[in-house]
Length: 287
View (cartoon, rainbow, N blue to C red):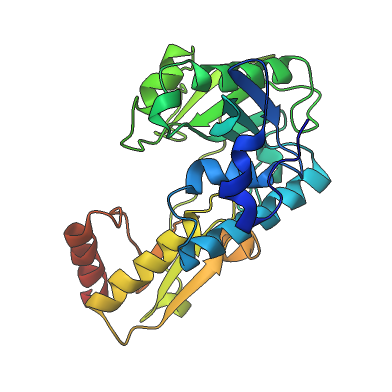
């Protein structure tokens, strides 16, 4: 099999070298195809320096996972080109969760942004291949997977993840643990998490902003930077702290995993809705 891209600078020039007789091939993540995985989501952002930082954070995280639990992703190739990916991990490795269920696997995302490779069943193949691994006890070192949870957020591209997962037999959890998550039983039934504790304002968060990001997604750090810039438009002098929640999970835990806190108040508006977001930040600073 030809060598795949191993360095950021080689990504665009080498991804197409993969030759296979079939049009669609799936591969588990390994050290040699990390760049192919990053290419799928980041092919339009490869020259952006802030996004490059997000890619480097994810690259480091992927290598850490490979060394500790094995593959946490699958890559789909169409006509030799990396076009789709699925990223997943056991709940037990999630550092920001106080209560962790054994035998629970999270699908963080499924993504296929290339129009020429859409409507070919690639996303379905990725999920079904992962579920088969779960049934056979070969997903992330888990001998038993009770059920799989999938984050069903909307990317605004193609079919919504909510509808996509429902078509694959995923169900709404019987509790309101996570309104954006669906589950699929594998060897057991759904097991709810204990109720989350309510947010308690921290005196140390007064008159400042705290923004969290995760290395699990290469967009998380660039998003945190965008959030910082939007806050500066509202309050140029406000101190803003950006924290890697994987490296400092205790900081996320004590803020009950809110991704943004301004003046000791959680901000709920998605930052892409800029005016609404800025208004909520203003209200937090004024109260």
